[in-house]
Image (tube, rainbow, N blue to C red):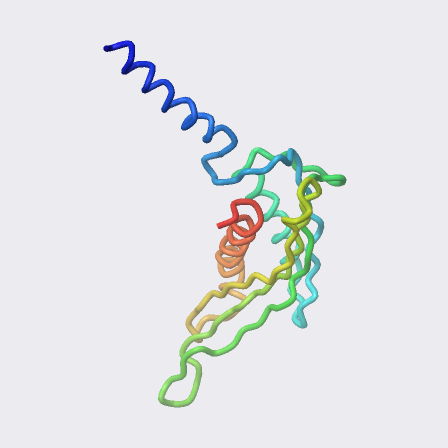
Amino acid sequence: MIKLKHIIVLLISIPLLQGCGAYSFSGINTSATSFQVNFFQNQSPITIPGIDQTFTNQLQDLILNQTNLDLVTSNGDIIYEGEIVQYYVAPTNATSQNTAAQNRLTIAINVRFYDTKNPKEDLEQRFSFFFDFDASQSENLIRDQAIQVIYERITQDILNATLAKW
């Protein structure tokens, strides 16, 4: 009787364990082994020096830290490219004196994703996020912090849309 129970448990366990073989804890399931991130040029009407290189580096770092893919400079199995298409500050809340109480910095990035091992997964999509700050603060004083917050969100959204499929 005990042998029969062990056999039944074994027969049930084997298919369950085999189904988990190709899955990773990050949710990324790909046959690719390498990736490349081409330089994301700033093509927005407002030119802020260095934001293009910062974004390119931050996307590379996120993929390196959250996947087991190797970064290459050419012939990657997975390729990211695109451009920063929008950078603007606009008031979001007004005071009773018709002045801005709060401003919003918004950045949008157009991304093209190519999976050379599985071309039907290719994607072109626009990602954007914002950072609100008090109108009494200068944009120059909050820019680095705002860009960091915005890029963290956009890069994670890109990873989720392209590799994690969330």
